[in-house]
Length: 274
Image (cartoon, rainbow, N blue to C red; front, side):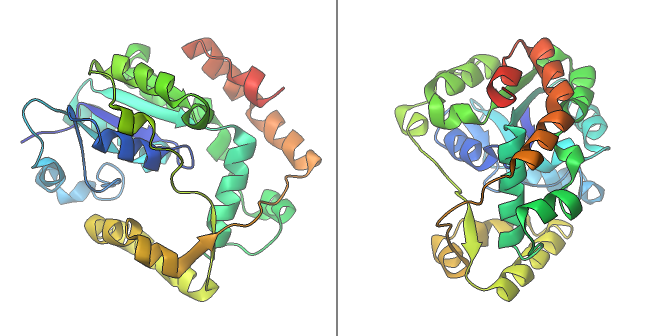
């Protein structure tokens, strides 16, 4: 039975849905039809057979992957992945910390988990550890080696998806992505709830299902345009991040961004902090 050659481990709010969809368009790649199996963090006690069942339709000529952005926030996932899958390739995308902060705020408000202002989110809602990017990816670099880890910049999905996908194909040693993958465009934009109570119920149910092996049920609802249209509507205007909050975000994350630049030869500090 096939198991992954690569895993996208995080972060969230940084293009995991887009990446899942472009991989589905590559004939030499198989990714689970469910974007997040949550095996290595929430369902590990279900056993490797339960996990392998997600890959039963993979062909012999395909490389196999999984997209599960929660793994980067799990203390146990990295060692479990290494133990069960060996020296596989690790993918991780990161997002401008200010953009991540706002996206996380809008997502939590959409799902009924917060109702305050952006300023109140900074003071009482946001998990500031989520933008300590070096702390999040360093365990994977140390466990799998830097050569087996690739990081991507969320901005490149909109700015230069062709180059980003070429980098991914080189990293995974696969042919280049077909044009319909390169031109897939924006997916999963920010939305607001049509009914806050219903949105809160759906969110809490989804969280419970993730811990009970209900990933296929979640996917059926998440990828249904009809269901999503009933629950959410497009966001007309995003709120602004106050200057004092933005300065706090940069101050909190800049040292980790510098570490990414020095480790992966990127220029993220120049793009995100200046």
